[in-house]
Image (cartoon, rainbow, N blue to C red):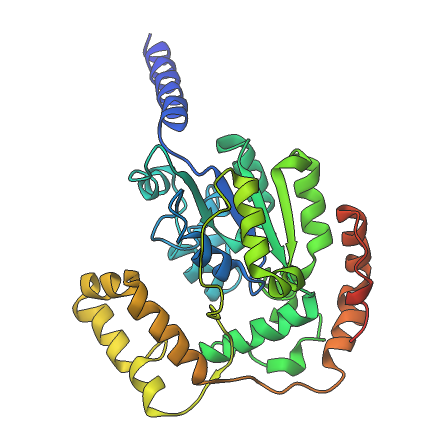
Length: 328
């Protein structure tokens, strides 16, 4: 009898869990990456659309991290990133509890692109969600990623010289070199989902016609493409911070910003949500960045020695020529 009661309780929990998944709000679309390929900009511009809802929390990574033991990581950086994300359904649902019924809801998590765990979890929780992948020439993405790490002062040991060492952290951490194997990653998505659910956008196309790409995405996710948005501002620019007073006070980790985070996190969050202040800070910070110089043949070497085979795989997956990615 005790066994039957335990089993019945387990079944009730499963039924309640399934009922929660069907009744609670979950995203209608996901921006699945890749990092440093325009995802933050797309998120920013789409966030201005009156028919789209995004949670204030960026990159929750729920579908990639649900079921993953936080202590299983080889690198401390990966563990810390997990702890800053969401790995349980209750907290994830909380992100969308205020989403109006007449709006399309979405979120952006770059980790989804290269996570097999994400594919299985997306199929379980939001099997019909639209999936948007932005990809950038992998060598260009790597350079931008490096500059972003310079900006945040978190460049791995060995710096740029370690990139061609296959025993280095650059090859072991999935968000560094491995993220750029788009052919391998997207092939798995096209095998798991209907091709009409997936839209792959090249960073080149977005840069050439950002307004056209945004309108195309709107049509894909089912909202009106007829809205105006200022696409001139450059979002999430990478680079090394100049050593000046502005960055010491109002940079990503400036004195004023860090003090606000600690003393009054509520005010800090409200200021982050203020569009005027946010756009002004972005433009000021962009003027205070300088890019890291790489050897002249660096991108060519990365392309030929690391990514060429996968670029050719990607061509087959997308059914599109990428010969303009072959050389610099």
